[in-house]
Length: 229
Image 1 (cartoon, rainbow, N blue to C red):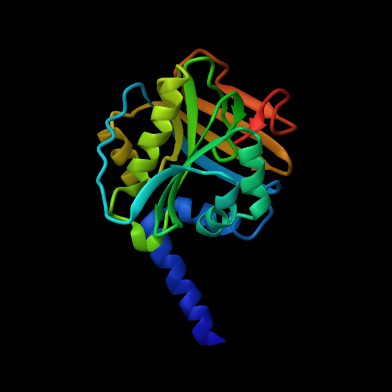
Image 2: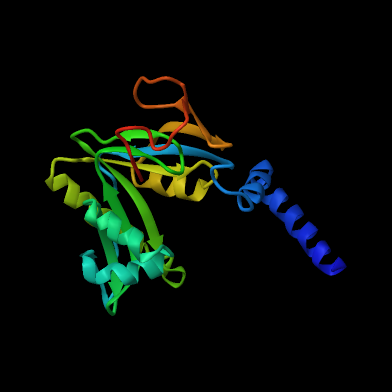
């Protein structure tokens, strides 16, 4: 028992040294329901002409997902099958990389009036944009740039529909992801701090690409007229 306690203390110290107060917040969030306590600090990134340089690999193909791919996508992303089904039925696009018939990377897109479950932000894609989300790559396939192939296929799909602006949410602390997106011509155009406490949601728009109220208090999420994403 004493050894277990020492291990927990050591892990906490290492986590705090690595992530600071953010680690403490996460430690609390992991142990309570999200309606009781949740906090996230995120940025909004967007690009009109993303620089998407892809690489080709033997036995890897880029395809649009359909009903036959649901189980494979669910296994990769770690979600229930019903979640993937609901996304496809809602009209979300999913482009994926397959290796020998197995899905190893994905990228999703959606349009409309959306409420970001992570950042608490309201996002309206209007007529010229789409919301980019759900970038996943199998752990043993990372470092190959497969996600870029998915991003490019998704972008080309929406460009054909007249939607040339890609929008995405990135965790503020994920510096590597932010830098990667900036190298692809994404710019950070927004920043939010989102808190859920005892069922009440508060979103502070520290920075946003268009005029809106800085502070939004919500008793119900998603707000009327908006869909989860």
